Length: 115
Ligand SMILES: [Zn+2]
Image (cartoon, rainbow, N blue to C red; front, side, top):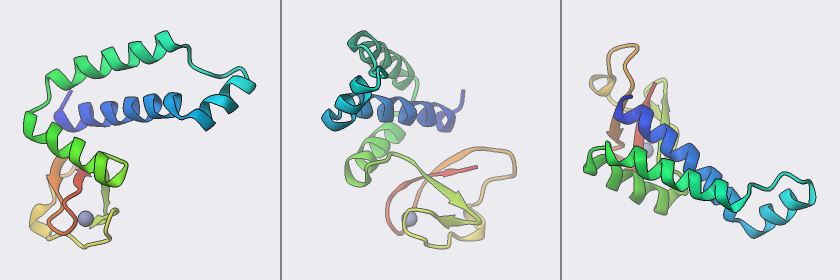
């Protein structure tokens, strides 16, 4: 799994943990019988820990910084445009087709996921 794919998985896990920890969401989920048991949250955290071991520290720190600042660690790029700040990225920064690439947006600093 590439660093980009791993960070996508980490972000999914972070969102699940965040949802499970949100009091309003938890109350509603319990009312509907859909709340994750606390053991599931611990399992998610363990899987997150396992995944992050293999990620280059530079990408992980940038991911954490973006998550703290923007609520999400990764931002997608569509048509060479950062979907976080809508800045058009230079042609030279685009990866070859079919290759997922991580890069920091030069305008907003978000961690970009080229897909
Ligand atoms: Zn940006």
